[in-house]
Amino acid sequence: MASGLWPVLLEARTALASLDGIGRYLPNPGLILTPPRNREADRSSSIEGTITNPQQQALFNVEPRYPFSPTDPANAAREVFHYSDALRLREWSQLSLRLIRDRHAVLMDGERGSDQNPGHFRRLQDQVGRPPRSVPPPVDVLATQLDSLENFLHATNPFDPLVRAFICH
Image (cartoon, rainbow, N blue to C red; front, top):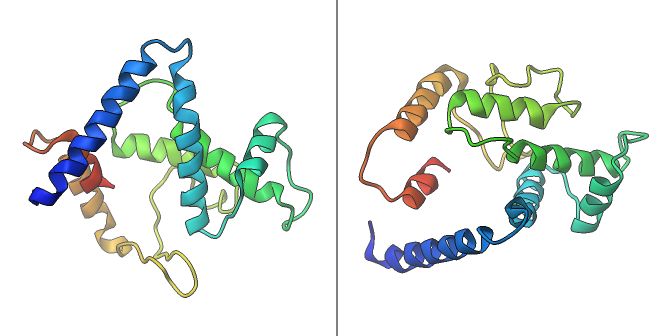
């Protein structure tokens, strides 16, 4: 690992240890995860062109509603809500392709593309954005690459867990 990354890794580990310590004294430690989970849902959804703001998300969380039209802002808020819900695990589970497929089904429940096999890996080439900002691996190598990812997730190796998380991301 490059020597310049050690201070960043140490800072991240210190922050996580602090959160772990604080979480032990909270009546509902899951509450501490809600803001970063919602921020991740918002930022990841924006990659696909779904834009919301914290106020829209908060209002939708308090009083969810189905959109009245394709241009209704409730569409975006609902998509971000489903993304956040997909990040919320009901119980601890080891990261695996099965878990990813399960969370994908939650993410797509009733959303755009829900007719395209939620909970399954794609069978057609895709891209993010027009023009493309990201082009994922071709379908013919996807299964091999996903198997490699799962093998890495379950392998014993010398990497720090935060470094492993970064590599997987």
